[in-house]
Amino acid sequence: MQNTIIYTSEHLRTTKNTACVAEAIHNALNSLQIEHRELKYTNDYWCRDYMPVMIFDDGVYSKYHYRPDYLSENEKYHSYITNQDDACRGLNLFTPTNMNIVFDGGNYVRCGSKVIMTDKIFMENPAWPLLDLCRHLQESLCAEIIIIPWDMRDRCGHADGMVTYLGDDKVLLNNCWNKAFRNRLLKILDPHFEVVELKYDCKKDKDSWCYLNYLRLPNAILLPCLSENIDCENDIAAIETFGNLFPNLKIVPIYSKPLINKGGALHCVTWEYIETVEQSLF
Image (cartoon, rainbow, N blue to C red; front, side, top):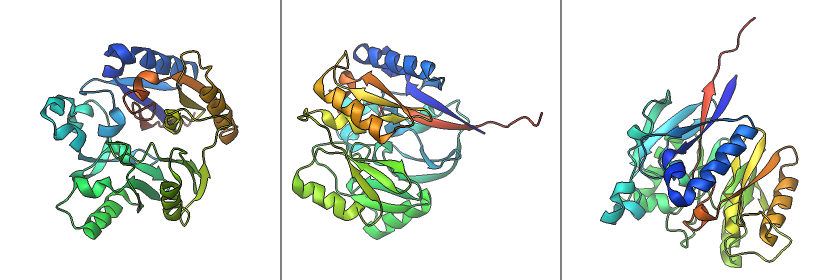
């Protein structure tokens, strides 16, 4: 039997601007009876980026070198780089592999036996020949690697704000692209997946990209929202849309503007740990 534990960095709770988001997440997880804990040895609250990535859904993870250029190339941001081994201190993680390349957990979307990531991975590892790096990723992650173009408006180059996995070979594609970029994404994704595109029955806010950065739980969807009272037109439309996408899951709106203003949302500040629990025979 498996137990899903949701981790957040303690910085999410102790940082003034994001404390309200941490409280809302923890309250929602308590209400949904989902166990949650805090990571103590981290340097910022974007824990998705620096925590190991899950290779199989039975709790097997892979490590990597977390040295993103958006932090490492400017000395004033060096203090925000979390050492992955420190972040994992105290966790009983099964990490049989270490990719030994520069990698970022936000640029990793697991889709069953496939993984989607943006082509920023090539820029982060310039010493690797392109085909060799693709082969190394495929072997390390035990997956077919699907590369999509980097949305250059996102300095992080993450895939998890662009597309997410719905299961059964379906992916959900964000709706914040111009026609040409959308067509490029569809051309790459269509041969591999049934692509569902996000649509809302209202005029899109400039930050409506945030809704794709939700957290999926066994019994619910934690949906980032733009308005404190969850009453703006975009939030209302998004809640309806996700209710139709996930009819068997509870949609829990979480005010997330403090995160959205920094370029991320709920998926970025959470990390799932799958704990295997032995069942009693009696």
